Length: 228
Image (cartoon, rainbow, N blue to C red; front, side, top):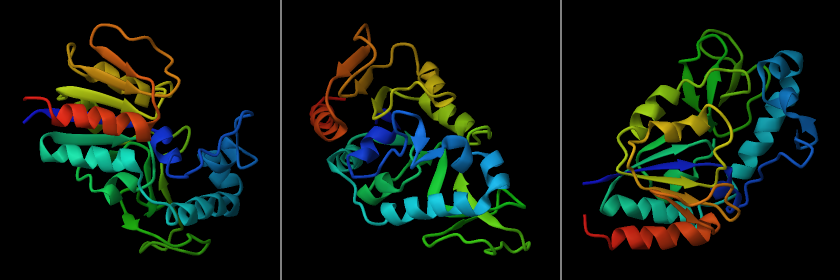
């Protein structure tokens, strides 16, 4: 059974109604990104950071997976599928995908500020005074700017085993996530799905100039009908 590795980004979730939050000026909901998504922001104004992610969590619980998420789950019938996502939502899982690695953390989890390996499911607000078993404040289980990306090595190892690579909803311009494509075997077919691709088709790189909800189901249909 061939292995398909999927690298997904904000574009696939945006089509379910999840805002990307960053506007043309680089602001997230009117805040500088360093105010709400960095260790500095956490130290400077914990309440603001918690409120920002509490609002994101509430929105996530109100949206549903879209056609692209469901199409990727369908691939599991004929392929071994590994999804590596930059997104912190659970839409891939809700659509039925079994093997999902979250490169930047998960919004529906909280973790201890005492022990980063103490992680728990969390679907409600995180408030000041919500403590772990060590009596330390909980924080969102999200990788902030300036922090290490613990799941990068695992993601690189997964990518290195790809027979087919799909890139969906991400420009692959943000590092270290952007470097994952370099770990794919040299001759692996790569399908890049984006309505405004910033690269040209060449060699084993195939460009699909569509949105995720249009391009992914079309590609999945093609792959499902391909003899392996």
